[in-house]
Length: 299
Image 1 (cartoon, rainbow, N blue to C red):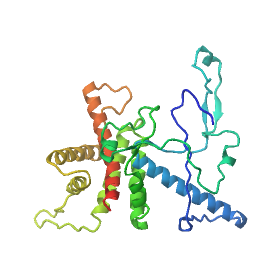
Image 2: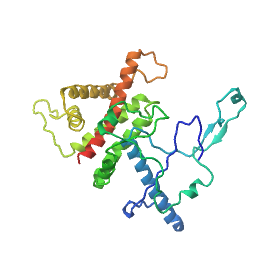
Image 3: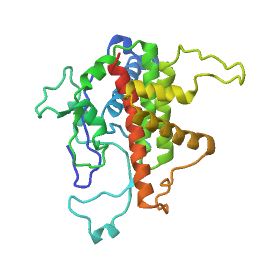
Image 4: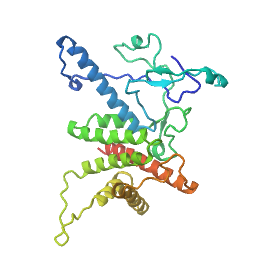
């Protein structure tokens, strides 16, 4: 399979099965193509679900190239790039990882027997909170939390209506990861939305009382946000203070349109503010993951 000394994306092979209840039917005009289209739709839907869950449960982004419309690109040599790059013309490229005969070799009826060393498992809390790599270093091998099997088992045991809400929250987590470097403020908003999706799920049956004097709800959104995190992340005075500060960040963005100071690539921001925003963004991103992960583990 092809590789490059410059690659930042590392191809992985995902093997999975689908059950009859996961079948996706797509109405089409030509009946003779119905079975083929349904098989494709079912496989793609399951693949997308697994990629979203992997990106939520781990500290890496698992993805496939899309759309397939293509992009301009320059083929890089196998060695270091030199002055010869000036003589190279761009080519229209399809965003696709491919090698001769690769697709045919994937048509298997059983799982491949692994020949590689088992992936390293890391203690749950340390994995998410102790300097998570988050794809910062492209040469770092993938590691998994020790709870990864339980996470998948618990997810696939959810009632369909509950799983659908968890899916929405997970999709926002993936958006937060995807936008982390290019749209920092939107990334943060996506992380908050994932959190609030889980908060709404947790309190879906709660009907707050209304104050007779001011007509306001007695159980505010901010309080539900804090109570959820204290339950699933950890209860302490320090956490309560931190979670309140996070909600304040969220409110400034949503209600005033405020952006992160480091939103622009060449923003005139002190190193102290850069570090503070970077750390806060990473903490909120990991909290958005853990808001789903710890909820699943407690079920």
